[in-house]
Image (cartoon, rainbow, N blue to C red; front, side, top):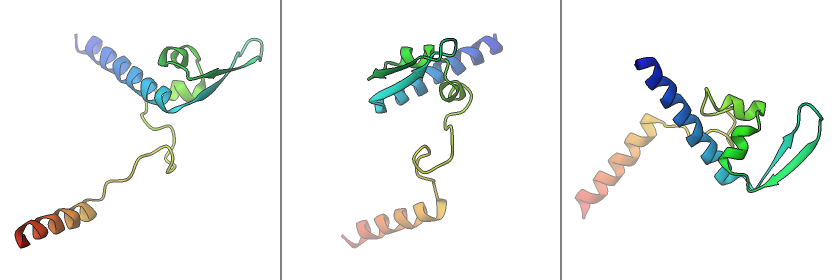
Length: 96
């Protein structure tokens, strides 16, 4: 039962990642591996991306961020910086 649940969660997360990618892409280039034909799809749905079998999309099945560049990964969390922000907010509230 645990294995089936994990498999279901993995697939659900994969679909969520596909929906996130599809929402921010205006166009997507698909290459048919058998014929080599290039097809551009404007505003693809997550189902289009799932059927593409592209290497980039396939990586989203196991990892949430394909690369670690600033464009693909979100802002890094710094505990020290967050504590400074929290402290400044608390200090401002006590001064008022």
